[in-house]
Length: 443
Image (cartoon, rainbow, N blue to C red; front, side, top):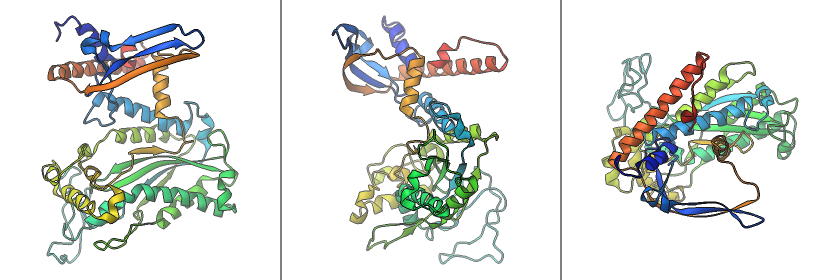
């Protein structure tokens, strides 16, 4: 490969993708024309490229699949969440003084599981379940112990409820947000249907798998005026009032599953553990919260041990998946429930690899802050890719492949490592008050 005459240009493409581990291969052309005269301002065609194709980033958020793109995605997530906390990226800095909460909502219990830390589950007098397994555990488990998160008795554990809760978790969140608005309106003496005329609730939330393979939700919740970030909230919009509304809604909202002759009708709700922490304007928590969300947005189900990063298409795929017995049982439950016609709309077999959870890892309300698209456009502008006013672009592209050959993968990994070293050295020089050429790091 290195001896090929086109190698320098190919290496430029690899470097432009940041050493992406699984780039997308495109073939085609783009022509930029002057909108008034029709003059060709720029023309690009992949027929002049090595292999007649252009490599672009895969943009996969999972670090286990593409470390280079996941790092970029984590950085974008950090700035997206941070902008909603302290301003920037077209969000006014006055949002820092608004009522802001960091909320954690958990899944309910589907059966006792082993836990790390102090004595697992001490139980005076012992006792056993109907299947003969002990109801207590006096062991002190390390955080990474294989037993942590595993049920005491797999036969007693509610695997059906666990899967169906995952399938309705996003709907439960929607109900929660609606109920918070209603409770805020009621407590302030405002007609619920007119809440939007007085205030606006904005949020950014991330879903994270716990050791027991159940999703819990972290969310930044902010109260603005009716105009969003540019508008101050009403006088009654205080952190204490918002906190009380969040606590009450978390314990109140429910979602009912469709009736099934095999399962019945379940009433799903959040768990009893709800953590609500106020974020103060002069506190140091803003960057920490943004970094925490950015850290978990790159974790795939493979890395957390709660499923797989790739979809399963047959029952044999479940049997051979490198997961724990607990997770495999959840996957089987998801696959079996997906066969029932009353759950067809949940597409459980399609989401077996995520244990039935169908929502995005990160979601936000429209007015919370900027968008990923805006951040990508800003980065392109920073790198010199500017739009030409009144220009017309005629583009024709088609997908022709993806990934690397084994040799190309080694070179791409080396490029990604070199860029990471550039970023590290640039950061160290900045901390020491020096300066280095960080153009490669920015790329």
